[in-house]
Amino acid sequence: MQKQSKIILGIDPGTLVMGYGLVLCSGSRLSLIEMGVLKLSPRKEAFERLGLIHKKLAELIGRFRPHDFAIEAPFFGKNVQSMLKLGRAQGVAIATAMHAGLPVTEYSPRKIKQSITGNGNSGKEQVWKMLQNILELEKEIDEYDASDALAVAVCHHFQQHFPGKAPGQTAGKTVRKRSGGWEDFIRQNPGKIRMP
Image 1 (cartoon, helix red, strand yellow):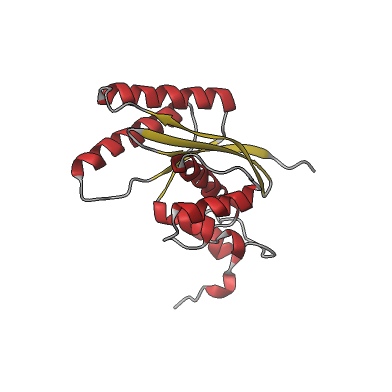
Image 2 (cartoon, one colour; image 1 turned 135 degrees about the horizontal axis):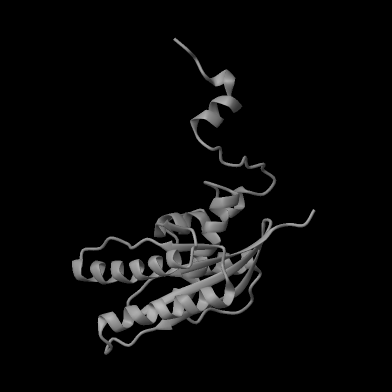
């Protein structure tokens, strides 16, 4: 039986630098397709930069035909203006993916780090070292925005195949497929239900 392959596009949104990472998933095996950044000039108008984000994502989606789209949720800081700008960039990215018919999933920065390293407080260097190990990469990173986006894609893969576990926790363990709701849970676990 042939393993079904799929491509995941991960995005680290930004108004001046947007990271992207694409991985090919064949069963539980992962490989890097491409990662990089879109650098946007601060001299350009905000709406022009949003248009360039849309254009780049549409180009990536058209060229690689990903099956899933995963994006990092904005980190809530104290600067309201920065959050507003980041939210716009994220909204354009999500709208572009949805327009292309891709399912969209959002992950918090902490969830991404937890999924990759097992520690939600890991630094960018630690996340990159773990990605190098997971994807068997030897090259060094030029832009951490690219590795952050790659981490989003890998996190999405792990959440689909090993929900709630870090990579080191998955070896040798059987992970049940998510059920379809309470009805499935009750049907699969009749001994856990007590009626009054």
